[in-house]
Image: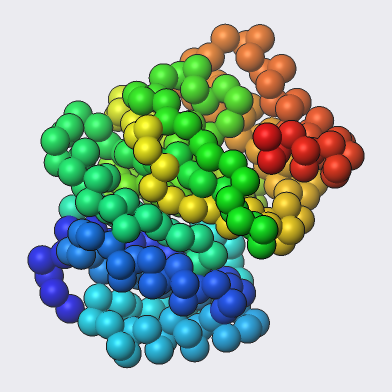
Length: 264
């Protein structure tokens, strides 16, 4: 493998056989090509691993590793991170799409702004019926951006590898599953590193029925937990703890009501 790659793309993959090839094709179509892809299969029950291995045979910049059993995304991404020997790491999910200029614009930002450790972009949300919503950029992230939700979109992010490793990567804890990224941003922010959200949407997130079903009680409870500990980590006043109830209220909300506001 070429030792001159500047980006390692971390991809934890699990039961995404129907979408993985399209996700990888969106990376192969990037205008910036100096990257390698690290695919870690987390005990898939479908053909995900076979598709990944086929791509590794066809593309020199793709490597495939696997967990002995299903371990969760935080463990899986740390497994990928062990193979990241490049200046930057980027994320990508096996059911999403990266816009062609994503890597080019993100690496240009980090090259031109050495004071920032992490950059990401807003996302276009789509399902089987097409695009239905677009996010917005925030610029430089401040403490108050952490209040309502994760201030950085995880899947489209790019970061300095040394910063990810400096904070110990993703914290492996069952209470952080599905919110491992939110917790990671708290850890990075509290160490004094800067984070930035670009204005342009450079990533498309698949947000179909399967994604909605993953918003279960455990995931909502975990979000409340990470808010609780994260607010204290970055020194937000005690009264902000009231926002830890928001994920619980979302869980209790009727599905049709949640879906209506989510799509808006």
